[in-house]
Image (tube, rainbow, N blue to C red):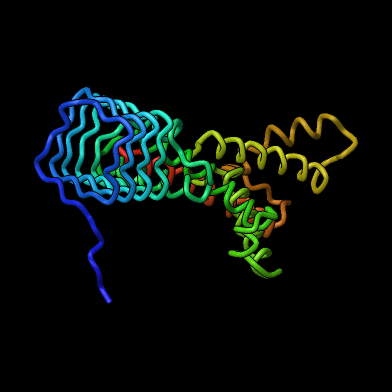
Length: 270
């Protein structure tokens, strides 16, 4: 049986004074206006903010659990000690500092918080804020995947119960860490360059043992000098095994593909 939810509808209203310990939970605000007002310990749980304009306001210890912010403007507004669990943002102008200062404590909720802000900033075309959101999102993802197979907490053991579920989560975490090491999960050119240099160093040492003199220091230096050209495909020694050269070519193509992917994503955010 359906019953009224008790939701309040506030349309075309304005806050003309500060608010302290007020309750506006389960309210839909449409075209709400506030400027340079201070909100202290105000309960906004499960409320919707649609096309609202709250400029240069201060929100201190307010509860925004389950709120939806759509097409709203919080330009110059400051949030301190507020709760943003399970919130949703869409085309809303809000300072990206809340990613660091107001992120939820639990990593799975923090992951959703960063993800919704990332999509919000994408709609606004704010490339710098997108990068900050992705950084928080990736850290939270790594923590969540680790805790999903390693943490003894009741939440994780109930959600991922059983040996096979934990093995699956361990494999997902291992894949995440491997990709993070190789190219920062698509976000770090420096990590990709580091991986390429490590791989080049590795094949230079392997070349010495396979095709050089492991007891000669000159052999190591010569192999190190030749390794970049072999990796780039400029030099393909005739005495090298073809399968070995094919493996190096495969890694080269993967590195180039990852590099282009990072560049394209960076340009798409601008």
